[in-house]
Length: 161
Ligand SMILES: Nc1ncnc2c1ncn2[C@@H]1O[C@H](COP(=O)(O)OP(=O)(O)OP(=O)(O)O)[C@@H](O)[C@H]1O
Ligand SMILES: [Mg+2]
Image 1 (cartoon, rainbow, N blue to C red):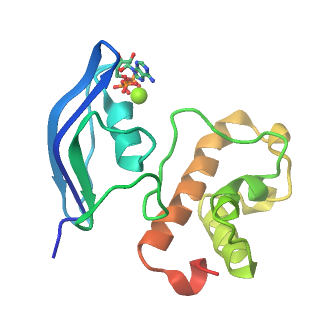
Image 2: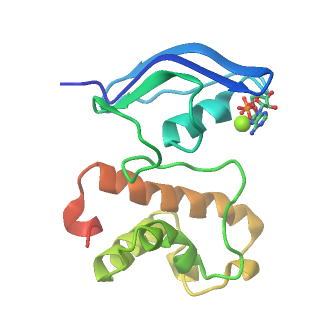
């Protein structure tokens, strides 16, 4: 069985700036890893590349043995900033992923509500984000990211259209 994530010789240049040099990482199914280092060492760049948001200069990223070809619903990503739409409700923000994928039905709504309950935000689901205390943004981003993880786990009976 292929590794969940296998990264070989990953390098990234931003113009003249070398951000990452020859990174090799292997992650097994169910393994939890942390990427730690000083500010500017390339952590976000690395994660953005695994998320498919940033092209590599060289090297390969395999997910379940398949070459990465951009963003996908088998990966969740909690951004450093909130990346939320303040004029939308909590629920409408949490549903952005399935909405962009063109799959917002009763199942997606229920699954998203379950995830909001998990992070203690279901009670605020109809509240516009502008009115929500700023610190709750992180919980919002977690529940939105967990949706992708649930899809990736194959929880299709609850997540897919
Ligand atoms: N889009 C970009 N264009 C040019 N340089 C960039 C770009 N993104 C990141 N960099 C540079 O690449 C290097 C790595 O940045 P990155 O944001 O990945 O670091 P980081 O480890 O996440 O830092 P922090 O801990 O402060 O979040 C930095 O020198 C940064 O200025
Ligand atoms: Mg960073």
